[in-house]
Length: 399
Image (cartoon, rainbow, N blue to C red; front, top):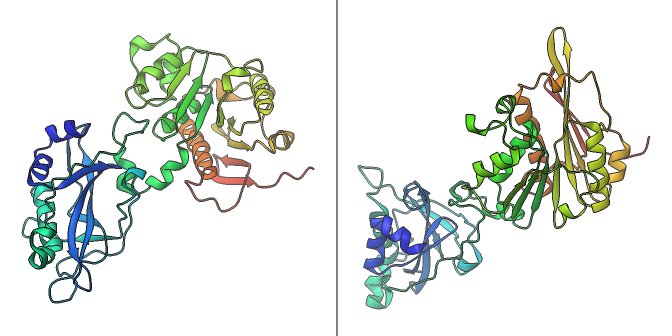
């Protein structure tokens, strides 16, 4: 991967040819062996870290004019901090392979009059001049940053087939790691289930398994993400979504399969489940299975009816923790029967509600993993479409 990036980015090749100790980690450019003077004018060695903005799999450009530094504040020969370096305290979470690079601060020097550097070579050369210049003046070649040291690139164990620059740019790598051991199952790839799949495909969980025994028809295109390819009509949903997302990530297995209480072995190794079915009787069998497997899950649902000629009703997200799943079931928040009055089955072109219901479910899951903040634990959430209000149930006290 390193050599491929070098071949597609001339400024990176120039850095290597100059002698910088270059590597990549967590979608950042890392340059070690950067000498500088501390407050006692003693030589120290730090590292420069630069965020990368990927254009495609192999080409990148500058994210901005800033850099990040692993080391204490660099000083000039007069015993004062180096001028022309703005910024302040900062940290960036790198991988275990770069545990020696502990970012402590950011530096900001915007070149005039262009307000941007020509490329990464120009940027690094300029900052090294500020940071290492005094050390080179005092210690000569012993302080040279041009060590020509070859540093192995951190092993890429990402499930994504493209670099996850969203996570690195937002500086939430530490939070994204909370999903690394999760094996998620989605039962039902209809409207809400398809959106849950879309969101989870872009979440760094280790594995996603999806199950749906239905075919993809025109009406599905109106309540699911993505395009409509006429050649897909009549094919299984599982096969269609597998093809759509295969180029995005690894660890995705979608099956044309009906899940009921007999499918005990299917969920072996699963750490969390999303139940997205609109049939109460089928849901009851799935709940039996999940309680037997003792796996936590979220069930979603909608109940829509006409009110003054328009559709109104509720969207629901219910969390079943493994240790209290039966208590949640006893609350009867989840419908395990068939409701002939439910218009959802006939008025299904409501993709915005499917997407919102999926968002509620995925946000709740990410709260459980500590990715999103949770004020207090809760089990059941109802969203009223008419009033746009939310009601939560936080207790499981028996009535």
